[in-house]
Length: 263
Image 1 (spheres, rainbow, N blue to C red):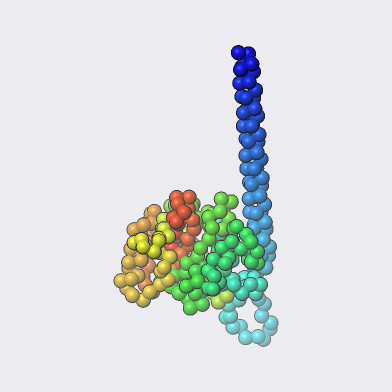
Image 2 (cartoon, rainbow, N blue to C red):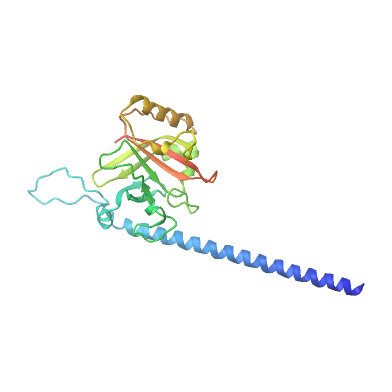
């Protein structure tokens, strides 16, 4: 009888030790992973800050007697020169969104998991859809970005679900090689990447149209889905920008912000 009790005690003791060891390993692994994530986020932030040191803060000087021509020089000119795949720089005042926008038409997702220099990076870059064009420009510029827990990239766009936040962050500026374009937010809503056989609203397929009915269908869908009324309206001749990022709702769900160019 005593032998059985001793065996049970020994068995329980062994089980408890095993559970403690597993617990320690899980906690240790979690700490290591968190530390790794922190290092990645820090390195990414440092790289972006390094790029920002090249941003021009003053207009180029013009010598005496030279013609005063109104030639636009992007404040990001030196950064454009570093990588021909950079097509713009997107900035939302008083927010973390302050990043280069990359585009590779032959492989749209190339920079989704690579940094500005093409090195592996889970933060990736902001990516302009292959079908969009900042030079023409297409009437809707669709930009993808990861929703990072650190708040990097499009990690702060969730804040736009609150209208009070939107009221204080209602504009964004896109700096291209040719000009600066300011957009005012028109709608904030949830979208979804649909399977081929599914019916539904494919916001990510709209790049502008001269057809009144086609534009109205897109516009009405965007406005009806919006979490709140921003008071901003648009027509088919307006230029739009669309920001798209993942959510924690589902693998194919997206948070979408649409803005209208105002300058």
